[in-house]
Length: 340
Image (cartoon, rainbow, N blue to C red; front, side, top):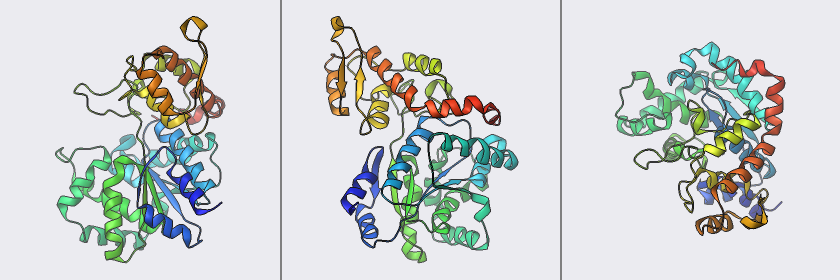
């Protein structure tokens, strides 16, 4: 596979941004095997954005010949008070339920790393050096990566979180830091500090964040899928009936493409991997197959595709895609019971 084909795989949706493509190309041209990582807080159950979208992107990286790593951020989860801030529970869920979730989605040859297992003197020195080179104001701006606003009251330990996440990148000696667009600030910090601290400069690859099934917030602001609000997301192990019900209730106004979670899931989870087939009676237009998100969006905005037809088609594809995870957890219910 040549460099252009590898870059095409890496840029494939749900990728939205690469910082920077120039550095990516330079590293690929060396012929060395590149090392990737994505980190996760341990909190709640795994939904489409956390699980399926990540698994799809990791498979793209693997096809491009990149070593892939998933970091279970146990100390970060504790700092952000996930699972009650109980480290023992966090680690148990990470190595049990979370790891099994990714295994069930067909990921192979991935290195799973528990963050605290690599936190030695060298790591904590990196945390301090990063903090030394970062203003308090800049660090506070990065707090948004925790899902918090800067103005919210917070304990003093919170300030360590961005420095620890940047230190993860340098400690793992990775080439590619992979995350959702919400992690952009801390990745930009790591890129900026790499030269100053004489650490390897990472490439940051940011992927799309799926919107809530219930649509935008009351003031029209973006609202993402949330583990703590089951009505906003589809979990990877939801039953067929649950998926159908959630899709039936999903926000999907006629002719509206923007902020439409049904169209969005089709664009970022289905297309580029296979077409979307709509089955409907002849009196309503008959069967039709869409081969691109642009084709689907145009037809929907023209009013030639009813929201329920779109919902049913996307639901059926998600049911098929999630079948391995659903079947795995049906046989291992004890893993689901690990998550409070």
